[in-house]
Image (cartoon, rainbow, N blue to C red; front, side, top):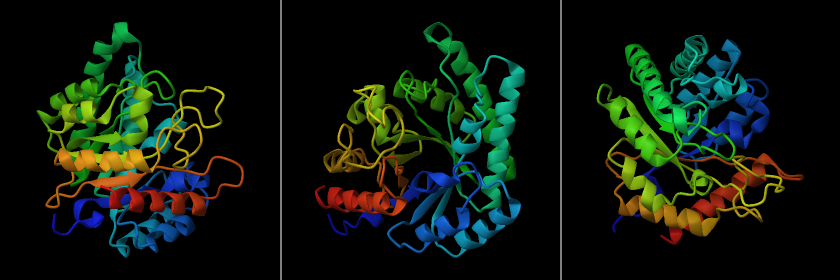
Length: 306
């Protein structure tokens, strides 16, 4: 297969505010923790979240400019903390959510990001799902138009669970495909983000779900989850370390995901997607450093077995 280096096939990233959860609120040791990732040449991409202080934001931009990394901006921290919903039926509440997401896009441009992560809001129930999807499509088009007017950032819609933890509208991959198809009719700066840790929560298999959305631009996450025991300390969408007892994802599942993405032609050396690890220390005595090291070992071993 020629040069089979993982870096030939993807831009290998990590989600900063999950690896260092003390900065998820947009405050704390943002620059110091980000420097740890920037100085580790294992990572060629990084996903950054909310940065409230403009001075810190400028420091982050300077640091990232020297990094030679692909920079992604995640709207989750600012949106989740404010419980905002871009498919809310109330136009006032929906307007607040769209406004906050646009502010996130502004911040993404401030730090020099080339990609931003977007997503749906809460699932309203099956009887109102189709109406909510129409509202979501309109909201995403508004955000796409705003983003395009500011520059070249690409938006990727992350698919979450619909009934266990986040309980978001998108949701099933079939719904993701339908929404993406409508948005992409008018905008070429939109795609889909598929997270390995969410397939168990969705009760969907990657080999069934990914073909539904492979026609759109795609990025990827890898991570772990637990959902079979509600008493488990990491129950739901909490991104624990790989191999956690009671969890769903470890090296074999990451290996199978890599192989599937290769087989589907989704790791194109001519147009390498970002594939980021989304993991965090959750249990007693776990540290950011050990969880990051765990993740790197899993990635290396999984890729070696493809």
